[in-house]
Amino acid sequence: MAYSNIKKDKAQIKLKKKLKTGVIGIFLGIVAISAWINIFQQAMILNGAKNRNKEAEKMINELSKENQKIEKEIKYATGSAYLQRKAREYLGLGGLNDHWLLVDLESTNTATAKEIPESGTKANIMQWWELFAR
Image (cartoon, rainbow, N blue to C red; front, side, top):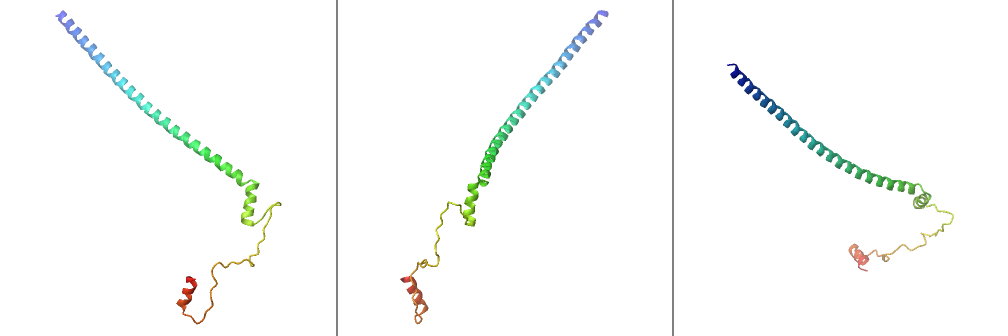
């Protein structure tokens, strides 16, 4: 009987070792799978961050170009040439070397249409007909 208990004990020990190895194997498998899933998720997050960085860099480049354009416009708008041009356009002011042409508006012939004949006895429709038919 003593030998039979030893055989049972050895069988139980082997079973316990197999069970222990199986549990450890399952645990390590779960850890390995979760690690691979985590690595995959981190790679996806990294790709998304890279794409957002590229978009931000494009936006920064566009804004810097727009900023340079606005700075040029400001430099031009505060320059003397721009101020002189606006003074000529809106205020009619000129510089020292400007030549002016004076036009007498009263003496110019502004009538471009035919003279309207004066007739007091004709019908109104006939007057219109003569005005436009000539």
